[in-house]
Length: 118
Image 1 (cartoon, rainbow, N blue to C red):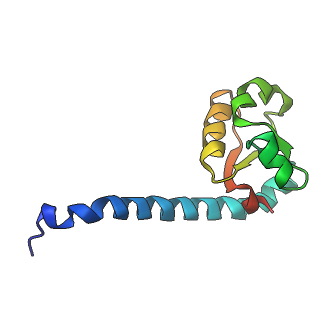
Image 2: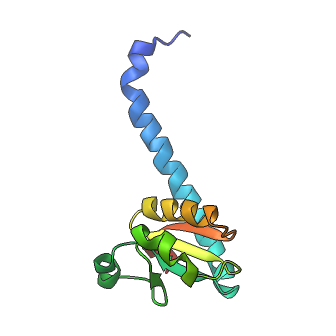
């Protein structure tokens, strides 16, 4: 069976987007299963949304360090404890995870949307 590239070309971008979203969903689901053990190990929950977003709704006990301040305020965090990051969709917390890892944090988890941390 020969498939002509021109025939499937319109479906490639939607298929790639669907695959990305599916992968992201399962990655956050897997991270969510780790959260109780990380919390028991003294993890700190960091919400990297804006202060206004955080004030509107958040995980009880979490702290708010907006993404644009994460590098400056990282000294507030203990590198020896797990850090669980969240935001609205998982994109900003993913960026924050990269920043913290580059600063020497080893136990960093991107939980994705803050609702996943409840």
